[in-house]
Length: 334
Image 1: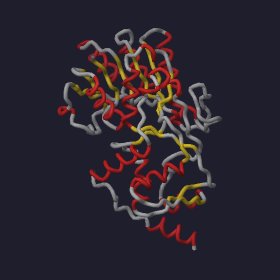
Image 2: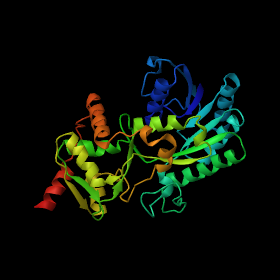
Image 3: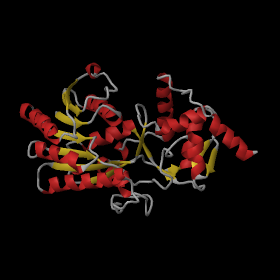
Image 4: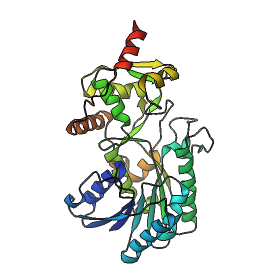
């Protein structure tokens, strides 16, 4: 098997390359990215797998397309997994370069295309939110989905759209989960902006995500489809925080405060997660892969592995000064 991964140097790409190497002996993987971020893993140490690196910038469409065409000219590519497309203009050169030359194109989209959920858990039929109320990230991903769907209709290649929920685990450069891990480790109350609400939450462990992508790869059952990728379980956000505390033998303290106070006290522009229901239904994907084969790491186990990774990297504790947050919490309680 020979595939192309667009992106590949960060969170999803790292886990995906490791999983492909584990599942497919002798696989050749072409990794195409800007070459700015050093890979999180040493490709040369992967067994039964050859990784070929290519430098190309999606913001330079002609150069990007030329690089991809060179890859298809010199190699027989079976499939493409696109982890780094954020705008339709970045997708068009790839569609043209791979049209009628590959069997399968997987676009990694996002559950952010739904915006604020109208019902939970949201399945793939939930309306997409193209309004200004949705994030630009979500709106642009919708446009990318439309672009790849058109390619499928024109029989350029078989396509699959995968929509992950929040992703967590080792190598998470967004550090969303670490925001809570570090504060809970240091006995700092979690200050949350807005009115108190215990919203439903769903996050997928990175290794599960990589396995789910591999299940869809070159699998005809997934051709032409759109699928949510999420954990097997949605829980209340407060329970998710409690699991972080439990993994470190710590009590959690969650305090809801005015939004303006949050920005002033924490210095953060945004809370790591949107404060609204984020529960997604992945029954459609589970039905195709089989309930017994569905990759799902329980939250406690995934959180524990993530904490272990941060400790091994000597990132925990971070040494960050939380005095303002602690002082604010003390004043509110006294």
